[in-house]
Length: 378
Image (cartoon, rainbow, N blue to C red; front, side):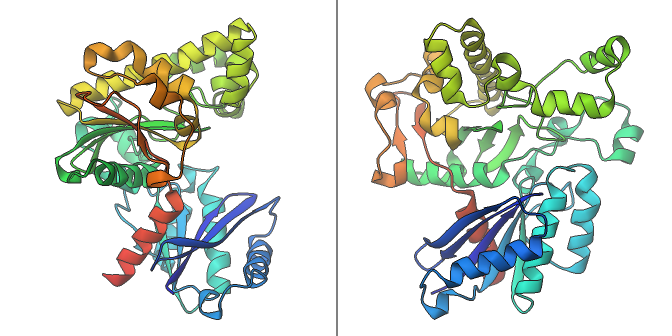
């Protein structure tokens, strides 16, 4: 066995998978919630794994891979954790205050538990370090931008990277020759244009707030709205943060944060829910068309993550109006339930479509484990 432990640590939760990298089989997994002390949570996780009756050679991983949300422009690939890396992750917490502190706490707890093995940080932002200056630069004062590290970073990088590789595998083609748009649609949502395996454009920006409509996040917004609310309604920065990150998106439009609930409400005649679905799909089509133009051609559009993988209605709302771009759906394929064949990957466009439309389940934990293993073996 060659087990790697993958840790996704939040401010109050710890999610883990133990994966045998010889077979890529998940040996153990779990989620510990209401965490107040990550060292205690890590000890609880180890007890869970020890009680799972795994073989002895699976109980001590060869490495621990850690998800870290924000790597700024300091990290363009998976990185072995050192004291300097820990310090840099801490310094980047100002860019991701909801995520990096929890990620850091999980790494520190894991080092206490496994002090003699390698720990690898895998950054959500790393995949997007291939963006060009024209893509990542915001049109504000350059001195202000430089002083405060303001630029597009992009997120969901491990998911976009994994899905791009699986797309090439599914199509039986070399990733280096493919132009792909990946739509990661979950509670958080982002689009990514991938050319030859490299991210060339992505919808999330300096933070995960920019871009598509999400479960509780607004996505794109005229920034003057914030100044307007500050002037006329005395909103503070913290109140604006709460409004845009937790009280907007589907929740703001409907009061419902789960796409399944929004769909059921629309079916029952709720006009707010119907409008929310239209806004949601409209924004995705807006990005899809822009990325088609930027790529200069397109081989595949790929839906992934919770909504992308499971909502035939959302996929239809996005793709059906785009026949003029060569995007079509086979309704029976789109509506068919997911199967275990090909790991759940399937084509939902018509057989001879010039642009393939696919559904490919993401697996961020496996991608983290793969990147950690590749780094250590290199």
